[in-house]
Image (cartoon, rainbow, N blue to C red; front, side, top):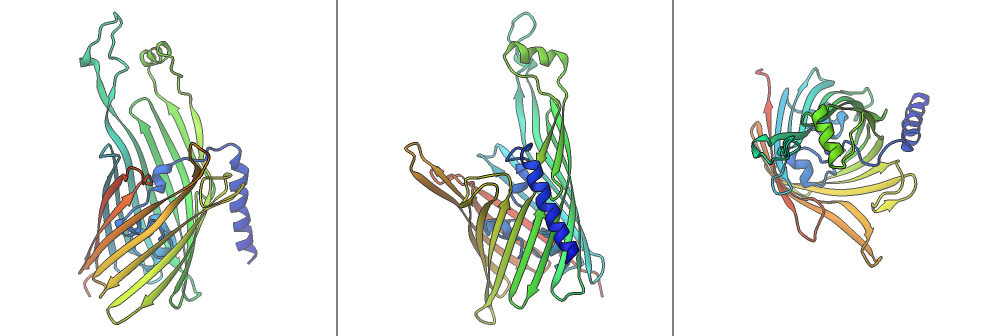
Length: 357
């Protein structure tokens, strides 16, 4: 109990001590989510996570892996195809008590025109001098999970290695940790995930050559400087309940509470310094073959131009089919702006492999 108290105290110490020097939003590409199953449930998934995607959602869930090996792939596009989001993962059971996994994420915008050299030294416009570059964020996660001697209780952790680059102009390397636990009691599952528990650091370095710096100065732009970007800890709590209606029909419902410690945010439950962002998802199944999913999350509370209180939310829907050794999932996700209904179609596939008897 003493060790547990010290761990929780350290978590909050990191969160509050870093608050004054960190931005509210950092490494946001890691907040999008992975797997169409979870996205269809509006990311209310930290207690439900029990497959290869648990390496991202809750490291402890990897201990509930049902196959010897699992692979997962996902691709989605955002903002009318301008940005691409890709995910791939592998997980395996080390023994009856522990599992190991590796995940990879890329979020990027490619083929961005570089017009810094459009005008030559003599003032002539030359389109042959226009090149392209990519602005991309990468993350690699290495996960370990294990069941404890307490029935139903498991824990896990992952190491995050982050690389971000903006063409040849600037790049950053980052490093962080996530920890998680799950406790199953009958039809209930309780979960907690501490993300970026020691604060994740991104060290940015500028790579502008002399010619590009001169272009920036002539056009009134600031020269980027080397800096360190911090991602503050957050705590996600989840509770899941399973329901059985018949031999073939069942359902599970999950509520997640994402707690941030960087001051007041425009979420449903906000205060200073702690704000709470709830999300809720359900997954109904027929014969564990066909799945129907839905959820609500990303509830934002703001004021319109007249000062009136305005509440928006993000509805998501999903479908899934479980075939022998293959799962195919689809999600229709709204990025949160209901006025223009910007939806994205997300597909993911999971492959299960077992050793021969």
